[in-house]
Length: 176
Image (cartoon, rainbow, N blue to C red):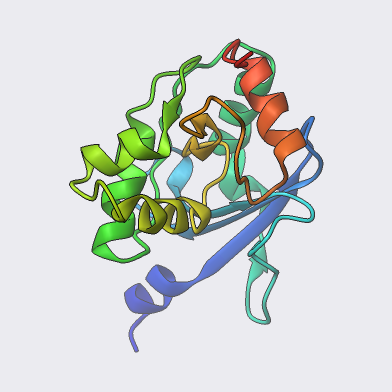
C-alpha cells in the first residue's frame, strides 16, 4: 500500500465537550474538507451504537478544529446549518434517508412518514426509514433529532429522548 492509500484510510479522533456530554468525533483525512478532516462519526455518551476508539486510531484534536468550532457555534445558538464534509458510509437506502434528514430546516420537524414519502418508501417503508435514521452515525450534525412521530410525540433517538428534547428546544422546535 502506498502512502496516499494509508492516509486515506487513517482514522483520527478526538473528544470535545458539549451541553450533551463529551462528544467523540471520528474522521478521515480529506483534501476537500474544511480543516482537512471528513467526519465519519459523532457519538454521544451512552448512545446506542456509538463509535468506540479502536486500536490503530490516532488521537488528533487539531484535525477537528473546524468541526469543533461549528459544534460550539451550534450549541451557542449561532449556527443553523453545518458545513462539514462527511465520509461516505451506509447503504444506498440509508444515504437517501440521511440526505432527507439534512434537508429538514433548523427549527423544524418532520415525521417518519414524511421522510418515507420523500425517499419513496411510504407505507410499510416507514419502519425501514426509522431503522436507517437509527443508524445515523452523525448525530447532531445530520439532524435525526428533527424527526418525530406522526402524533407529534418524540420518538426514538439513539442518544436518548431527553437529548432529542434538548436539541429541539435549542432550535426552538419543541412540539407541544
